[in-house]
Image (cartoon, rainbow, N blue to C red; front, side, top):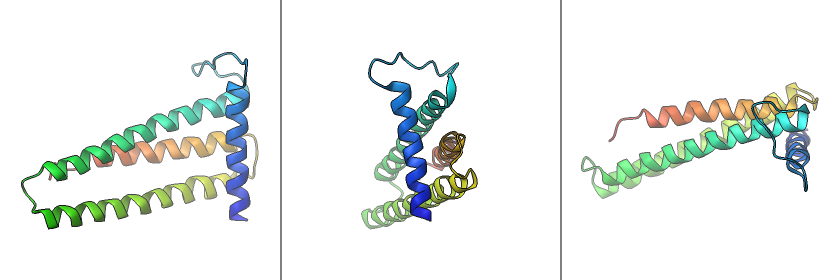
Length: 137
């Protein structure tokens, strides 16, 4: 069941993007998307921007650890490994909650793609803010 929901959501998202940006299709105006495919496409773009912010926040945090004089090399390595493990587990949680739980709750309806992308975006932005707000060391 879980695999089917994930594949259904992935299919909806891919179909929305293809329809919105298909060959010869005009640019999508995400300030005024027209129809479900464009709405889904725009939601996906918002999530992609949030994901880029999260990736930058994660890299910056690792960079702060590397540049810190507060830790020896062994402690730096252990801290980075712990952060990497936490981030992987957080991604698994986010995806399970948004793709599986939210996706399933929409039962494959036309709002599924938007609901999933919005959930991914919101959780990703919250995590980016969390990482950005951590102390330098």
